Amino acid sequence: MSKSKGNGVSPDAMASAYGVDTLRLGLMFGAPPESDVNFDENFLSSMKQFLDKISKAVESPIKIKQGRKVEQIQQDHRDKLIPVYELLVDYETKIH
Image (cartoon, rainbow, N blue to C red; front, side):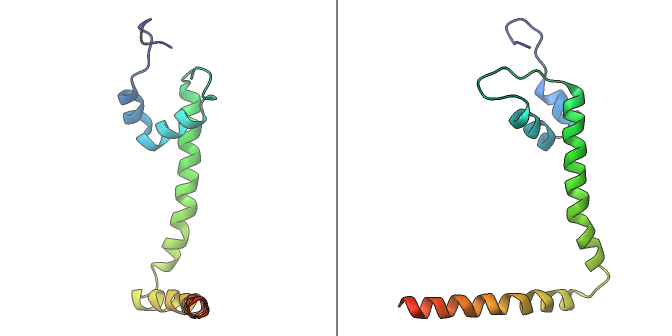
């Protein structure tokens, strides 16, 4: 597809149909940099499905934690980060 031949694909139309992130992913993985990109809507729809799967995988642990109180979640994170912080302080002390 070429702009000079008048058969180009409008990025605005694709972005509104599939989303900007899907369009970016399609541009990145559509073809190697040295060759032309042939836009196929099936390819973009598969990219959209891939991003939807990632979104579901990220959101599911968040939904599980929503039943707990915020203070409990913060305490869990604090308990996990205290050993890391202590290790960094020890490392900084040894450097100086």
